[in-house]
Structures are given as C-alpha cells and as structure tokens.
Image (cartoon, helix red, strand yellow):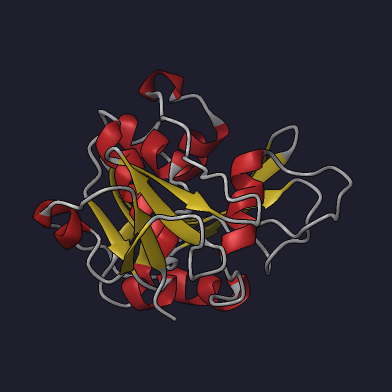
Length: 236
C-alpha cells in the first residue's frame, strides 16, 4: 500500500520530487488515511503513528555523543581501523549508523520501511555527519549487491508488553514497522557471506543468541554478538 504524506499549504516542486512515491494530499481535519502517515509542515516532516494524530519527529543526532570506546565501536572494530566500510542493514532511526559514521566509518544505511526511510533521510541531512549512502530496500537484497568489511544487524528487540516499555522512539518504530520482513537468523547467514571481516548483531542482554557467535561484548542492558565473515576481502 502506498504510504500517505499530508502537507500543510502548497508543496514546492522540489518537495514533490523529494517525496515522490508517497500519496500526497492536503492536510485537513478529515484525513482519508489511518496511521501511520507522514505530515509535512513548514519544511519539517513527522510521522503520525496512532489515533492521537500528533506527529513524531526523530530527535536530532549529536555527533559529540559518539565515542571510539563505546561497545558498538569496539564491536565493529573501529579501534583497529576507523575507515571500515559498514553496512547498517536494519537502520531504523539511524542512531548507531550515525555514531559509526561520526567516528570515521564509511556507512551505508538500509531501511525497508518507506516512512522510516524518509524520516531518517531528514535526520541525516539535519546532522553534520556524512553517510556514504541511504538505501530504501530490504536488508537481504542490498547485502546481495556487494561485500562490506562489517555488516551490522540491529533487529527490533522482542516486545515485553506494557512492563518495561521502550523509550518513545522505539515505541514509534515498533508501531509502524513490520519486523517480520527479514528474519534475523536468515539475515545472519546472508550477512556472513557478504562480510569480509565480521557481522555484528545487537541484542538485548538477556535475549537468546542467534547461532553461536565467535565472541561477545556485553553492556548493562544490551550486548553485541560478533560472527566472523566468510566473504573474500576486496580492495577498491
């Protein structure tokens, strides 16, 4: 189904081109679509994800929060070589991919949801971080097009009901994304064939492992399972 974008006022030709692929309609009190959908007001884009009809905008990314000593940076091996080519295959709101790019990695982000992809594009462009590419497509499909030093998988954590609700950005992501499109276990097998160094999978600390990782880095609430890649290393 084609996602909707509702706009307040007249859209410029540039905005229409930017949101090509969306069903465009003027914003009024009786919108003809049920959430989720995008809303564009005064050049700012948000997503309405429930019947409250209050648009959510992903928070701005602060590159000063990026640390080469973080568990994420160590898991992907940036302490060894900061300029690694990394495929962030399940980007979501892009916080981890932006952190890696801010630390010097050459990051390609992939997002399957057209709504999330459009908002992530806005978030990236509002930051000062340079991302090599942002692709709208399936993780498995993009993996199959090439080889990366590292492939990073951040599947959505299993829900826990109302107990221990996630922070708002993750609640919104869960509300609008179909997390059944790419099964993490099948993605892991594909990722290992297209990663020359390693595949890193982010998990809640207490969640079961996917297969048997080669090593792990554990934090207070999350862990990173690391698997050796099997692709032949290529140089450019």
